[in-house]
Amino acid sequence: MARTHGSHSDITGPRVREAALALFARHGYAAVSMRRIATEVGLQAGALYNYTPDKQSLLFDLMKQHMDTLLQALEAQPQPSQPVRALETFTRFHIRFHAERPEAVFISYMELRNLEAANFEVIEGLRRRYEDHLADILRRGVTSGVFGVSEPRIAAMALIAMLTGVNTWFRPEGRLSLPEVEEVYWPMVRKAVAA
Image 1 (cartoon, rainbow, N blue to C red):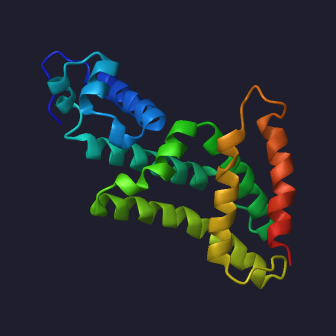
Image 2 (image 1 turned 180 degrees about the vertical axis):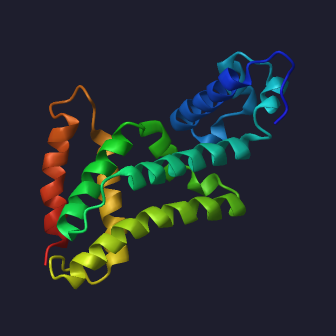
């Protein structure tokens, strides 16, 4: 990536991504120009191209970084062999991880339509890996007789949609804390797939 002599790309680059993330989440990808992102960061519009080749690359980088971080965090979690415990671990992890990143989550779901075909394919592949992790837990539970779902992959996508929905209404200053929300959601998830 090109860099202006004496610039602080290790500072400005992240600021560009943070500004783009906030603007895309607030106004939508299509409504945000590169000039607006540059203004937000305090750069001349032309200088923005020292940090990203174009707006599509910026969107793709934000979404890929979110998915890479999600998958790395998932892999760092304990992976219980018992399906019910594994499902509870996944449920609590998903709620916590996503609640801490509302803008990234919003963009990752709402802006898929704006990805070019090759970029979409990469992001979909990463999303599939995440969904597969949950589908595998459900399959193990079906095999051991503790879960009763006929289509583990569809059930996995339904559960992920339900859990991600916490982001639409949860507020840290609200009546329930995030751990309390987890306590409400976990029995609902368990009942939804119980044998």
